Image 1: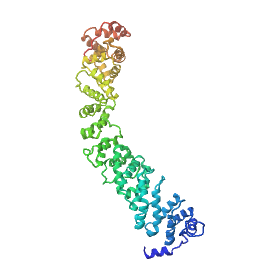
Image 2 (image 1 turned 90 degrees about the vertical axis):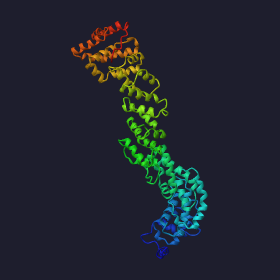
Image 3 (image 1 turned 30 degrees about the vertical axis):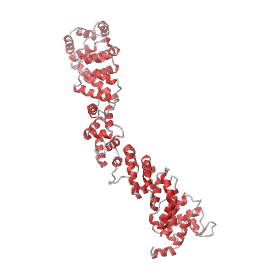
Image 4 (image 1 turned 90 degrees about the horizontal axis):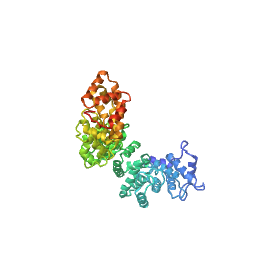
Length: 547
């Protein structure tokens, strides 16, 4: 300490502008009975100790070294009535003196701060801790020997608050107590607390411990990286709600991606592009660390499968093997089977998934993929034969709604085409399957079919023969064909000009039998019911050549 500072401490007295509170000044003058100054054998009363510490913290220049030392010794002595307010006031005084007064003045307050930090069990973080320079070697050694057993016992047990073990580790660091064997367990507790309730856990005590103790920070980040791989959404919340950030030197790929995801305020319109950005920020190759792909996909799609088109792009970009190793193949499969009906990208993805993940796709999802593949083949004309039976068999295995409806829609579109196989139409009629026939009726009501009925007399003639056929096939077909004739074909026929109607009848005449006569009878109001009774019992009718 320099000559001028010693002179200040020795001769300074409270000036007119530095008198502080009356309670603080009186506490420095009176002892327990209000008669003695604080010194050997005397401690101010509890309110007086707290007030004296607070006054001195704000007026350190007003007291000489003797008075400061006496006050520090008085505050640091054992006391059964010490409360948190007094501990906090002593901590504020220590903060004011740390690095300003000599270690001999600060040491009683340092001992108090460290002792109280070790005993800390409440929900508040411990008082601000002193620097190691505030202690002489002898006092540090004595306190280390005295406090080490309690520190180790407290660090080895469960913590009520994250700030408790963080404060204990800082105490051990100040005292030079080796607790490195307890660091992994403490790091696990802190990491779990940070991920579970980040705002509460990332308080001043934890921030100070992570800043002051590099070994603890490294272990906490390692554990957080592992936890974030299992729960990326929690990892993203950690960075959204706290100022904790992995540095450029931190090789924790899952944490790095969570921090990058948290920095994006709104969902990216190009989610495949967002996935590539996260993978680039991970700092590792997904082929070397396949699990980063799983973390990145869960961050982008929030645990839901991507769209079928997105899944196809991701599979094309990464290849199947990395998805197999990361377990993300199931997200791709879910993207296909959970796609809405009519999603052509899901149908295009299905055969790729069946081929690339033959061993992985479970039996419960295989029917859905096979139905999507059937829909694709029906639209491309490569379905082969027996597809009505195939669709019904796969439907019996409880597929997802989207693939089932996609397959039924594609199948019915083929049955309503001019080049459909008669065998498949017979299979439809004989199935008497209400759901499939409902899909057939819905397909017949599409604008494409209605327009063709009006514009193509040959097509309308073919549909008449099909929808007039096999009334005895079953109640579901009976209901379907009646509905199709009355609600779909009749409005289309009524819109035809005379020449178009004549062309339709000529088409029926070329089909043979009595189709033209039946058609003319059906056109008369109320005649179709009589025709149905007349012809239904003696002829099943042919399937025709189209429709």
